[in-house]
Image (tube, rainbow, N blue to C red):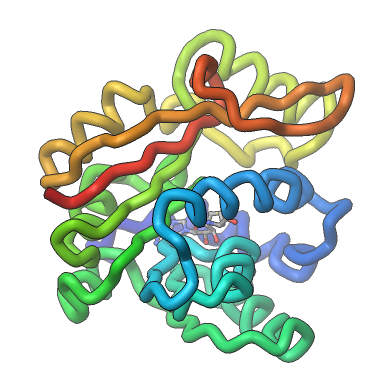
Length: 233
Ligand code: SAH
C-alpha cells in the first residue's frame, strides 16, 4: 500500500483491541491520561458544540470523552478491530460518534477545513511519515481552528522511561509497543507543524510518577510524554 501506514503497527493494535476499554489492560495508560488531556483540550477550545475529528482514535477513549462534553465527533483509524470495539462501546455509553476506517491524508482530501478542532494523540510515533499526518491535520482544520498532537520525546530518558520502564520493568505496555527511532522531539514536531501552517501555542508535558502511579500535566517537563497545542494561522 502506498499509504502512509505501517501495517505491522496496525496489527499490534488489532491484536489487543478487545481489551481497549479494560482499564487494567495494556490500555491503562491511555485511560489514566484521558481526563488530563480531555480537560486540557476543553480548557483551550470549549468542546461543547465544536466539530472535532480524532485522528488515530483507536477504541475511542478520547473520542468518547470529547463527545461526552458536547462535541460532535468523528473518529478515524486504520485498525478495523479497534473501530469495531469503538462502535460497540457506543451502545454502552449511549453516545453518537461517526467512526470510519481511513487515513488522515484521505479524509483531509475529502473534508478540507471542515473541523473546529483536530486531535491526533499517541499516534504520530506509529506512522512512517508523521509530517504527512500533520499536514493532513492542518488541512482538516478551519482557519483559526485548533490542532492538538501528543507523542513521546526522543532522548536517553524517554528511552529509559517509555521503553525500558514501561515495557520491561513495570510491564505497563506489551514489549515492542514503541520503537525508539520513531519518537519525535518537540523541535521536530514544532517544525513539521510550522511547515504545515500551524502555529505552536503551547507545549506541555505529561509526567508519570511510578510511586503514586499517577500522571500529571507539567509545563516544565516535556522530556518523555508531551502534548502540543497549535492553531492554524
Ligand atoms: N488516539 C488514541 C489511540 C492511540 S493508539 C488515544 O490516544 O486514546 C494509536 C492508534 O493509531 C491505533 O488505534 C492505531 O491503529 C492507529 N494508527 C496507527 N497508524 C495509523 C495510520 N497510519 N492511520 C490511522 N490510524 C493509525
